[in-house]
Amino acid sequence: MQYALIVRESSRDFARRADPTYRDGWIAYTQALIQAGIMAGGAGLTAPETGAVVRRKGEDHDVQDGPYPEGKEQLGGFYVIDVPDFDTALEWATRVPVSAEGSVEVRPRLQM
Picture 1 (tube, rainbow, N blue to C red):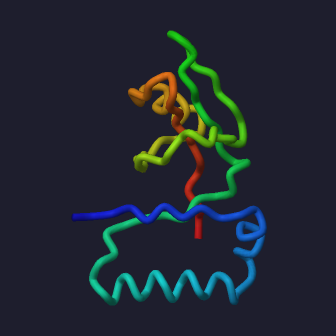
Picture 2: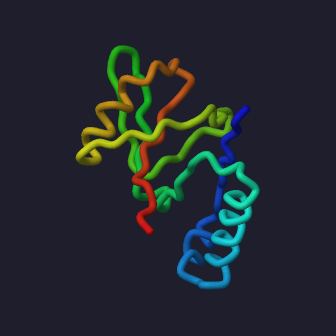
């Protein structure tokens, strides 16, 4: 059975990504997962302000820059899609069958 380890970071943590000490810890952890034979995939994400949240508003959709999810929302999983640009990613996000209580966050993958 596979599990997603969804990492939530503070804004200070995102700023620390350029610090070799902080980054090296993540590299070591990733290498440990690989060496243990349990790494199935994953990706770092850019900071939240680079993304958007798409919300269903009746038959329409509302796009909110820099996601600010409501506390009642819980992350249910993620899809990784390969599309040419952010607008195309937003278009695909509007097709996810979430209820009016849910949302889809769209954020570019961190390029290393």
